[in-house]
Image 1 (tube, rainbow, N blue to C red):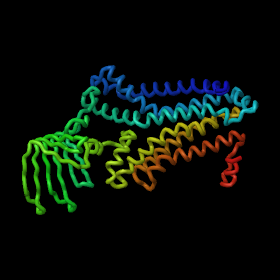
Image 2: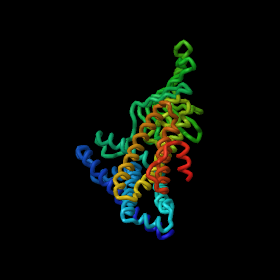
Image 3: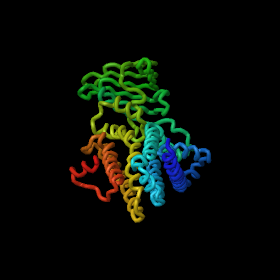
Image 4: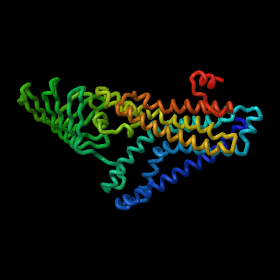
Length: 385
């Protein structure tokens, strides 16, 4: 690593760390102010509050990292420009792209960190927050929500309807108070299963029911047979405890492996029902690259050759960042709602568009030109100059 690279990295890292820690502090103060009453009324101890906010760091980190990159870049490069350090580097024969190489490397490292957070820790933090807020209202003091009452699941491909009176969050525990209705191709009821408990044995791909009552119906709807059994086994069903449980989950609370599993086992759902999950499956990978896109347009805008251009560069960078937030949420809503845009493009269009803007700004700054050409021919010549 050259001495120039170490100098640029050192100038950038300090304000970046300050920005990230500062935003975390502001978020923490705001959250404590908003939730203090609920914590006091729920009797939550200080250790429970600390554990709750510690678990939320992956989620808030995914939001803070691109903002920290933006402000740190604008401050670092703006200060170096005002002290003529950037101009001195360029005058010594170093190209602008070479000066910014350490910044882009840091941008890739932060993107990698964001990808790690987006893969599983951040969605798990969001899911834990929803459970914790429900438990505060119930006075459980951050104990893990143990079960769901009155759960209904519809298996459309196999025409089975499940009603579970009590389903534990720990899917290794058996379902309690199970009622299963089997229908034929004409939606007529053929069989019903009533069981006190239902346990799934994955190795044998078998459901084991206890305290069972089996009812078989004739095509006319009359009871053909009725059996009472202490235990009954049924194998080969496509339902698993996770498939039943996942039907109530929201796509933004699922990790990448969970989204893959959901899309695989619920392939029988229609396009509109799968669109939110497919969109978030792509968002989990596209969202972290917003950090690198921020670096692409903030770096050239942070470098100024004239003092009067400082405010204009900062304002433009902040405006582009707000544009990313707006269009990212817009396309995400369109893709999740199956509104004429595929999940892939709903997740990646914003990054591609603003990444192209960043590339043009970087080329503009490297060529020291004030205005961008807007005709396709001139734009291509400009980018390849």
